[in-house]
Image 1: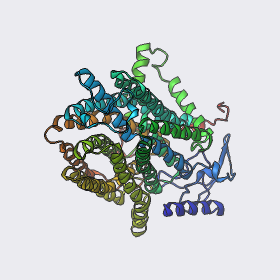
Image 2 (image 1 turned 90 degrees about the vertical axis):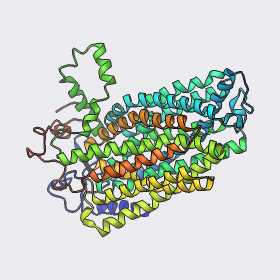
Image 3 (image 1 turned 120 degrees about the horizontal axis):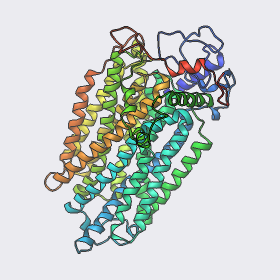
Image 4 (image 1 turned 60 degrees about the vertical axis):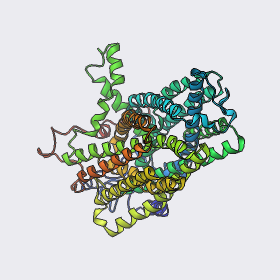
Length: 588
């Protein structure tokens, strides 16, 4: 964290001294092509490296006025960070209570259908803090895992449809607005779960299905993370994104550390599971309000206007738009293949860069969804294997989250800073570096041994130690995502992260299905099998990491016939530079 603040201060000093004039906010603040000359605000060539603080200037109309803004009005990751942390704390605080609530609802329905009664499970679910051991049976867990599977499938399917569209929408209306949309859907789904908990009907668990649909239609956690990463990419130079993305992932795991502990304490001292839902919804409302009122937007009004104009022109000159029937429009809205083209761009991008984009995207999606699918099963497994309640599970998640916070906020920035100092020739602004690849491999190895220890653990302490070991695997997420963004131009980051969000949503259909089915099939005779399945996935990713090309020189683009599919297409940014737009949207 200290190294990141030092980088921020260095960049700020460069701005104030005028040694390295930065482009105004709303224009590219750095060079995606390392070999291209950097032009200063007043013309000519700028000396030194590109600055990471373009937000110190305001673009008014077509001309940029060099106006220093107060720090609280400049887009900055450090302004977004506290509200994003509050949001993750609120959502993570319900991880264990949601599993317990689902288990109780299904347990009540199971015994109602089979003519029995589960002790400790009253019609008002929230009246008791814990579930009686009559619900901790293989049959009830089997039924719960199937309900959990349907919930995840509904949420992932809806998110797969909307994620890339919300990613592109963020270019036109701003990152913070789309982040608030995604957070609102998650909050509304929790309100529906609260209604189910208050219901006295045995079949109230079915309300969890529309709750999953609502959450998925607003992008869920996938869109939230994509928007946060897009916001950070708008404010940060490529060579510094690994550390900044690590801070954001650290904030996410800070939520995982503090949220479950908070949820466990609320349940323990109030004796009512539902009270945590009230706390979570309140915190999310505060975060959403802050996105609209406090957090500065990273995209200027001019850039949003340009993106809307490019979008309008693309629709206007689409020959199929005027004649498109209702079924055609529905097909276009549900088309989830078109946004994936950004993973294999045909705009003059080098073939080696294309391969890296595709490989890193698939690795990132597999990594994220394996962790997501396995984590939900881990909570069920810990309750069955060690007799944990939501309180113990919450504290386990807090240990896991705390370990990752220390690693991502402390160890990762220092490691990246040291490696950049020790090997300055590897600290390039575009493409994957050898440092990136080494850190990714290290994280995958840590995840492998962590999940092996999960499977071999015979006590709760050993199980927790496995979680602390796997915490080093948290490095893989920010490293892969920051490396991905260094393979595309700034104008394509939103589309790229939207496409990876689409892949994550699709993988959320497959990964939880596999892990829940494995657990449902093996819970009666060998419930730890799912841990070894996850370990096998991480070994596979480690092998594929040797296919990442870390020897990309000369920028991202090459117009030679050997590396491109056809004549490079014009970048939309080049068009908007020629077709100047004023703040009213009138072309000149």
